[in-house]
Length: 129
Image (cartoon, rainbow, N blue to C red; front, side, top):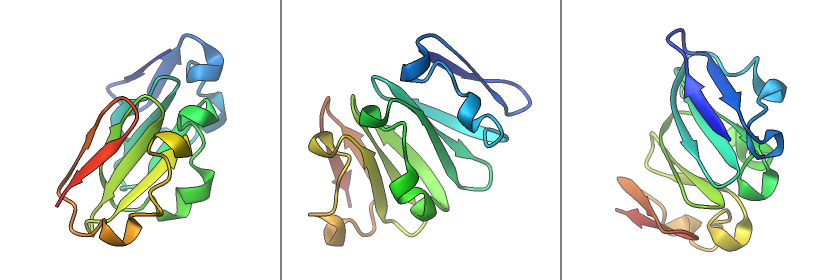
């Protein structure tokens, strides 16, 4: 699937519907989009108000429901093949997607402070402090 940001900040998507090509379920939230990142089967967008919206296949990060309340003041989103990692304004990191491929950072969450950058491999993330 593909996603593009229009000049008015809305998003247009096309391609395989279950892999993010259909954004109808979140279309009302996709306003003032600043940036989009993609995994193998989902997308995540940073909005002008610092929140983030995800859509697509849940195992590829298309469902951010469990962390949605944490996605405030998002500065950057990085993606790997199956998950997303968002750096927040306070230097913490929120991850979601396939828990076996970087979507669950709970075991290292206490170490994810003052993060400046996140880098991705195909199935993992590394945080630069």
